[in-house]
Amino acid sequence: MDCFYAAIEIRDNPSLADKPIAVGGSPDKRGVLCTCNYIARQYGVRSAMPTATAYRHCKDLIVLPVNMPKYKKAAERIHRIFREYTHLVEPLALDEAYLDVTHSSYYQGSATRMAEAIRQQIWETEHLTASAGVAPNKFLAKIASGWKKPNGLFVIRPYEVENFIKTLSVDELYGVGKVTAKKLHQLGLKTCTDLQKLSLTELIEHFGKLGQRLYEQCRGMDHRSVEPNRIRKSLSVESTFPEDIRDLDSCLRIIHDLYEKLIVRVQQYAANRVIKNQYIKIKFNDFKLTTAETVSNEINLERYLALFQQIYLNEKRSIRLLGLGVHFCDENHSTFSLQQSLF
Image 1 (tube, rainbow, N blue to C red):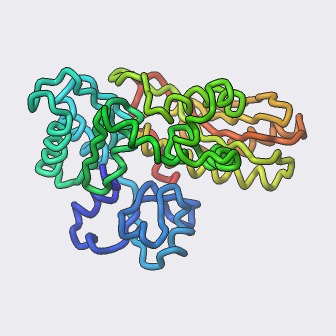
Image 2 (cartoon, rainbow, N blue to C red; image 1 turned 90 degrees about the vertical axis):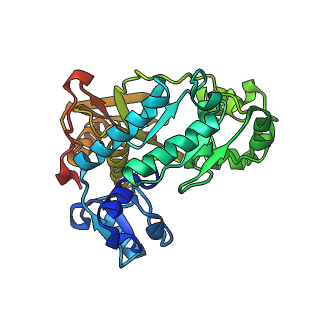
């Protein structure tokens, strides 16, 4: 879906259509944005940005509070449309899913025509636009889905994969964040063609387990199947530093940034899940990994800071990675549990 939460708010209040709109929290409560429309993005506003920062980018920005029950109802109706075409639907979030239509008989088995029909059906029933990517595997379909946003459709046919992948930036690959992208660029690797020059062994030496994934993706390969019953047990965000950090204030600032990103990710990918506990992960300069957790049914910054200091005061060593996460309760206990006060 295209800027899903904001699009729903604009649909329900058409007077907002030509204004910069975002959905998120209050700036005086350390709020962050869940999403924003494309007008706001022209000002440099983006999801996961602190609301106070967003206002500095766009003084006329209209920030609306999160109305998760409304978004969830719309998502349920959209996902029902998906399941009309195939039972192999793997939700990624309220507004996104993988569909395996390999054996679907609709439109003589044409995935492209099915994608177009689904987009049209969503527009007719919800008055919301969706973008779709059609490709031989999940990795390529995910990239294709963003290629013609908003309200677009992009198709990568099997015989087009080799040419498509050649010029694809390594920054687009799954699992490549800012730190990994910087490392790839330092090695002179900017496109998938560059990446193909390294052997599997070399990539694993440089990037560990991610090396296997990079080796396959730069060749357009992805063997993952669509899993309709996959249940997310946890969700986390983390950052690996180009240089080890020992300064306490720097670590606390990074934890605050990760906390903001985690809130947005939970809203996007697990808004209907009940949180069981929250945890912090720290990897020191000797690669020793330490974790700590505390029982909690909501995401709380102060608890993350307390967990960090609990570990850091005992270790007092340089840190190469920090991560924050949550574990969810069993699916049978799921309800909408995120407190709106978080925003």
